[in-house]
Picture 1 (cartoon, helix red, strand yellow):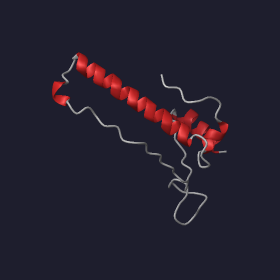
Picture 2: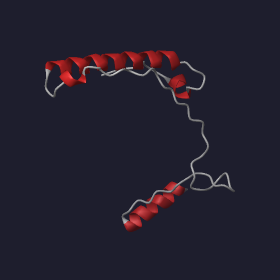
Picture 3: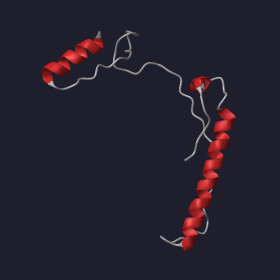
Picture 4: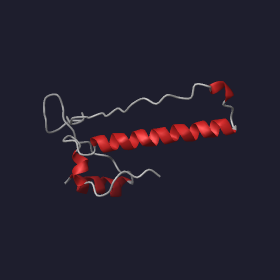
Length: 104
């Protein structure tokens, strides 16, 4: 119903108006506040940056090597985090998972 009304407003005025759907403090069915949903945050191990940052100048080979090494550490930590939590009970989107993690 709201899509029909939204389309009519768009055809009449040329501007598409968003219709918000949420909850309020009093009514649970209507309002502008977001609906209550659990949020799960997963934090991995911290990565240590290179300590000899004085020798890392823009365009230097040392900077490129340090960047590549830190990127490799990041991708490895990301893959480990994915493998550790991909089948967790709270990870609902993983129930419909078709493939695996791809890092481009």
